[in-house]
Length: 296
Image (cartoon, rainbow, N blue to C red; front, side, top):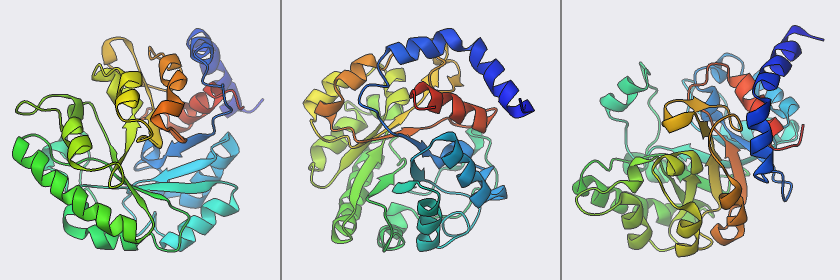
């Protein structure tokens, strides 16, 4: 047995009770295809983009959601070259993350990111961001985050999303918004998520629900699906330790996904992306998560 395989199997044996619990929550039901948000490999994928993508394909990842890296373009490639590379490995490029506005210094500092790369954002470069995906397999352009600390910022973000929705629709793309836990906390009397859902129609804006952050925020996810049926084509799946103190590989923590998957059709879930922010061992985390889908 190779050393890497031994370490992976040993780690999984240690986590076996949690993985079993996760499988019991019926993640396998419906043969859901595991996708990956490449932010899981932020700072690492740039060292060997094609080699990393091949490793993901070998691990069983079938769908890719891209984000940003320190390389120009799409991980150092043009959009069409990146798309062709992914397809050549038997995977599909489904969606792409962009920022709603430039990240505040406080955000990058708290994440421990220095020299954050200059990338397109919807506030300043919406038309360019959309146009950059022309001729690719991408169907969804996703606002990864946007300023929401004040009601003024929330309202400004609404206008940015409205403008971006027009460009996306013309290009044949669907605009989605990705949440963290902050969108479900009141800002001057209203939750930003609710404002976005109300001020933008379902034709203008869909949602990529990050289930881990929604759990952390205490959201009743099936009830949210029922309130906004069919508006959640994408989701992120992650896991946490007790009291949400630490993010863990999917399938090894406290989160019970059974109610979410029972309501998946109501929410309109179609694409399931594994994500782990700044993992200690990205490949082991991804492998653990893919195994939790019961497909390895």
